[in-house]
Amino acid sequence: MVLRDRATRLLWDMHCGRKDRKLFQKAMRLLCQVIEHTGDLTLLTDGERRYGSLVFELCSEALRTGQRGRPKKTLPKGVKVRLKNKGSQRPKRGRKRPKYQAPSPEHPDTAQPVATTAMHANHLEAFHTSLRRRCAAYRRRTNTYAKNQTRLQERLDVYWIVHNFVRVHVTTRQVPAGALGVLESAGPARHLGPHGRPHYGTQQAGL
Image 1 (spheres, one colour):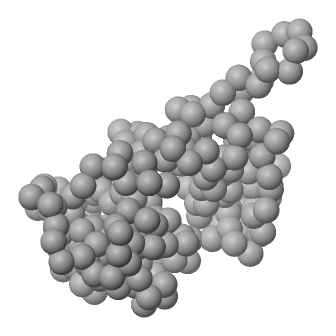
Image 2 (image 1 turned 30 degrees about the horizontal axis):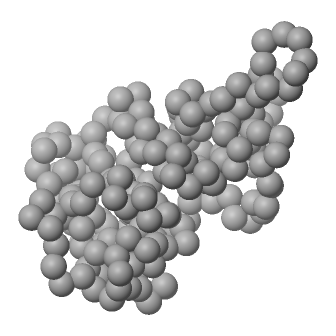
C-alpha cells in the first residue's frame, strides 16, 4: 500500500501486508489527517474502488441545504476522488461502468479541474518497478503478500526515509520532503532524527 503526492513525489505512507480492510483503513485515516490540515485533496486510483469508499466512510459530512428530510452525505469541500476503470467490460452483464468515474458524492462547491488524462497511476507503477530493482525483499515477497511481514516492513521503512529525506528526485531536482516544505532545505538531509521516521503530524502542520 503506497500513498504518494504527485507534485512533490513525497511518499505519505508505505506499508505491506494482506490487502484487507485493516490495511486500507490505516492508509485512509492518514489521508483524512491530510484533509484536515489542507482542506484540499484529490485522490486518484487506478481500478481499486476501496480507496474511495473508505475515504467517504471516514470523512463524509452531512450537506445542510435547509430542506426537509435527511441531509445527503458528501465528501468535504475541496476533496475529490477519481477512479479509472481498467480492462474490458464486454464479458460483464448489466450496466457498464464509465472509464473515468467519481465513485463518491462530492460537495457541490468543490472545483472540478481534474482532466481525464490525469486520472492514472503511472507514477506509482513506475515507482513499484524501481522498488523491485532496489529492494530484493520486496521483489521476492510481493506476490505472496509478504510472508515475513516484519522484515519486509523494516526495509520499506528504510527506503521511505531515503526516498523522502535523502535522495534528490530526478524529476523535481529536489528532496521530496524539501519540495513539500517539511524540510527547510530542498537538498539532501544530512541528519535524521533518533527514530528515523518523523511523526506525520509535524509534516502536515507545514502544509
